[in-house]
Amino acid sequence: MIDIARPILPGPSPAGRSCPMMYSTTCAYAIRAMCRLTVIRPDGYVRVQEICDGSDLPAYFVAKIFRDLVRAGLLTSAKGRGGGFALARRPKQIKLYDIVEAIDGIKQYTQCVVGLSKCDDTQPCPQHDHFKPVRMQILSYLNNTTLDQMSEALARKLEIIGLTLPITIEGKS
Amino acid sequence: MIDIARPILPGPSPAGRSCPMMYSTTCAYAIRAMCRLTVIRPDGYVRVQEICDGSDLPAYFVAKIFRDLVRAGLLTSAKGRGGGFALARRPKQIKLYDIVEAIDGIKQYTQCVVGLSKCDDTQPCPQHDHFKPVRMQILSYLNNTTLDQMSEALARKLEIIGLTLPITIEGKS
DNA sequence: ATGCCAAAGGATGATCGGATCGGATGGTCG
DNA sequence: CGACCATCCGATCCGATCATCCTTTGGCAT
Image (tube, rainbow over all chains, first blue to last red; front, side):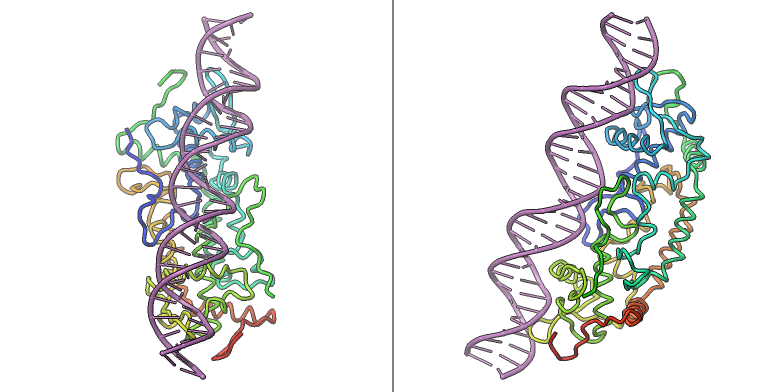
């Protein structure tokens, strides 16, 4: 089994909140789960359980997240035997940006870093100008990274360490 | 009074969590409050109330945050009349990195973006490699931005829009 | 010394995101 | 048709974060 540690340890943390740097925990789950789905079967339905097996991804929660992704148009779903979730588009056509937009929204990437909603107009913001290039690079990263690339990277790494996801076609686990 | 909107509107948000992009809400408060402190009086004690007046900064909460910053060695404090909080070092010597480290911690900037604690060793991570340059730029931003610069920018913007912080020396509000 | 003042600290409540569960819905296959 | 299967949906629990209040501590000035 894959020994993937928990997202961010709560811990005692004299200094350190559990807030991730860029993605919410939910969004990180979404990204990882979609990558695994793509690796397992990029063009067919995959059950949630199949995706989460052998990882620390919480199946119930991933199912809920996937529902949101269906509404967002990134996934399709099918009930009943042989059902599950499938990509709505080709992996190359799904950008990291799309996933983040669907789950976390993109307001935070257009808003002020320190949380002032109108720092570019009349509201003073201590770092708006300096931060702009950083923000640009992040957005560029989100826009230029595709599910195709990410799942490719994941597959390669899994191969290197000698692990395989439960790749099954028309079969059961 | 300054009409500074709340950090991130909760709202109905079909897609969007209230989690800021990089800093926790608490950390954003810390940054803004320290900037205001610096603008008001960079080399003396300033009362919390004085800092928060005319802003949306929650005074009680800022007071609590400042306590942590005292423990972290970024601020000093003095009780009684004429007391308050003061910078422990010159504004040029205080990096944005220091504030973030004290409040949010820096684990998130060294960890994997998708939350895998050991993605660089044996754990597969779908985007570790591609994200590296982005992370580098963010860290560089945090390390090269000083309180001096930020408060300077804040002061300039306040001036442009014709607002002044309650700058009082030895006086009362 | 005494009174005012401001931070220190603890206790508490509100809110939100993360996570779980049970039943409803609807499709598939025999 | 009817049993099974997997998503869908709502309700809910939990913990951390955010925020407030009140009491205590200690320093300054008169």
